[in-house]
Length: 579
Image (cartoon, rainbow, N blue to C red):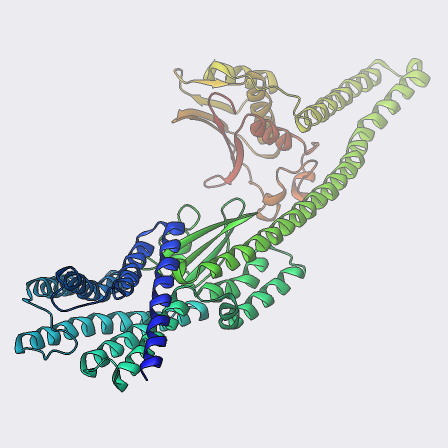
């Protein structure tokens, strides 16, 4: 039995010193508060084991002083281990202060002991009382530490859960070993052997909790590994949207690290998927990941093509560091999948825009040819008639033909000018150069030149309104809006303008029938005219398209709304000062 105790004792000394070195190395790598408490706890335990190698002879004061230091280290260990457990999530301040006071009292009592009984000496009543308080302090702290780690570990992923349970079990095992030492009496008794065996079991459990071997981690990680494999397999299949990619990985990603909530953001910072995040909190994720779960610690992982916000427990970074690395791997693949979808969406959008551009081009050419053919056919007919029959026609008939020629050439010239306007706008070849303009004077000139001699137009602009606008753009927009109001609406036509904040607003309102509701979505399309308008007015269907294009070129917008009680109201909104 003596040999067995000696062998176990040697194994414990070597093991606990090695454990102290491993934990100290971990602290040097992390340099955080949690690792510092762990290094302090197990460093004191390793130092205690080394000090036990110094013999304890009766009457040798230095050796007896070393024995007192050993007891002080033993008193400190459960308290420092408790502080390690509470470093993840603080406990109540009153309870913490009570345990600190109890530990300090035992330390003071240890220093005040008149003497320490040798192994073959009987214990005095005072020393027995001291041992009872010592065991009370140790048991209370160890029980709190073990309970805290065990309960918190239940909500963690497999590896972290096993590690925390191992630490809880080790704390209980070493407490039981201490009790056996206290009641063993002789150092070679069966309780002493059991105490050394329990200390060894605690040592192994501490190693499994603080630095488990890779093979053990792999064995523990099997459930999360299965989740990861399923997530990786899902990323290899095609997804049509970024939301679909996010939906495939949210569950497995949360399971890997035991996340309370998780959100995936794309490269623009837009949330494309979330799990267990309330709708009201999801809106805040774009700017800050905090807010979805205030009581959880947030780990924000940057990955190619986006980022992953994980609301997890404070234990995860210490006990689940490798799981976070797995999540980063999954996040990197998720980022690649998001990039692939983004490129697909961009290519799909580009293809749709190209198809639409080709369609618009074909439609534009066909409609332009049709619109040009009408006046050209008329002109050709009039010219042919005048050429072959001019000398046979009376003066009135010749005047009618010449007036028709002028009307049709003006119509064709206007159409060609509008087509050139659109081509320059599409090519962004029109420069916008804002300058201070007295708006009433400028609008009055535009109205007079675009509708010469036509009544029923009112310019409602204050004399003191001055805005920085591009003269040519304002001319094109206002002239098209006023012409459109007279052609399709009814007088009076009111032009109102004002300068508000940093924007210039101009409205053109008529009192006609307005625009049919079903035609409003196509109102600004090129060559678009409602069936109703075709029946009573001529036109090319380009005026509003040109006006809106000039508004966009100026960095503004042209909007339509129904006038009250009837009619059409177009509102131009331009930033004063250009784009």
